[in-house]
Image (cartoon, rainbow, N blue to C red; front, side, top):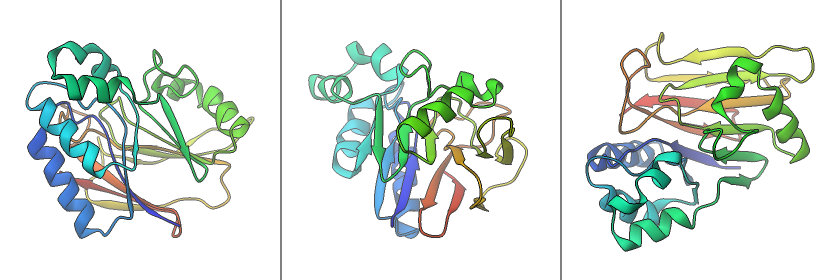
Length: 206
């Protein structure tokens, strides 16, 4: 069992990334996953250098591909070598952009995660963790005719918060929010800690 530190959408904001990592240290995470969109205005090369040191799982984001020509060789080679999806212990990690992963896409939110359910079931996963929307949210979800249930939304609820996941649900879907580029109306910059033993997700502000 593992306490996962999960972060996404750094967008070159090195000070925010460093604050997130301090938050993970305080919360004694065992492993760290980075869900893409590492590059952006700011110190993208510095972000990649630090991510390479700490990430146990790292996947590519759409901004990483868009900005690959604006960074140094080492950063460009790193992001271009990243997978679009990673699976560890029944957890699926992706960025959430339909251009990268059609079935694990934030577009599927409005379709009650039907494609995501099929993909998770086919790949033996119970949890999907993603970013891309810059809005931390958590759903518990069932297959078939069972509609997803929103457990937390950082756009309307305060941080930090800890959500206990429904053990009877077929799937859980977790969006970590954005570490480095919060959008107005979508909640503050945030990262998450997913405890696979306690079945809890803590969302905390950066």
